[in-house]
Image (cartoon, rainbow, N blue to C red):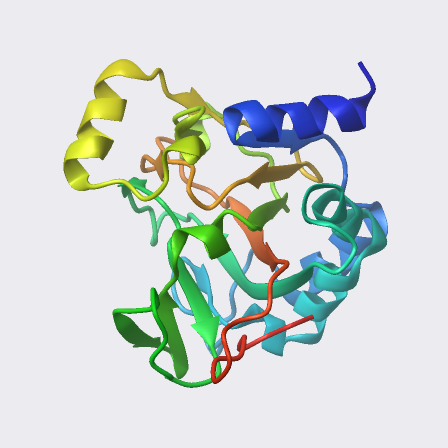
Length: 234
């Protein structure tokens, strides 16, 4: 099977797929300079990562990278765009656990009541809302790994196939956890992990914390209802 076909099949059936070495050395060098592992005391980056990465030139560069966009376009079509970007980094000082969840929130310019959107929150100056299921099914997360991520680094774990179940209640999540085997998404530097927002995923604290930098790009392919605008559209 052609690598692209295998990638698309994995996303369609399992809800996730790995694209080995999809991030070019040039892109990795740009991101390395922008988000180095050693954080200076005067740095404004919060422990564990950084929000609003599309306000940074390096974030825009990653969003516009031909190879990265090619992965998203193969799934969402030619008109897709990056609607949000975040940096995650597990370190000895920020070694957290993430419970099983779906990614249900989008970033918008300002609050405007629309069917299916809300509750509303504000995170570091940006308005966010829970989005309706049809919109989320037309989104895709791509995670660019700046560091190797093995079992000891607290990798993302997923429950394959759960992206096909729509939004899940806590009882639904518990039921899926009891019967679906979790898969740890291990990656090398330069690998790109793709997954659907509705896929159940989690992560454990790293048992050997060092750095596990991941640039998380959220692609979308739909316009929002009249009165709502994406906060970023790169």
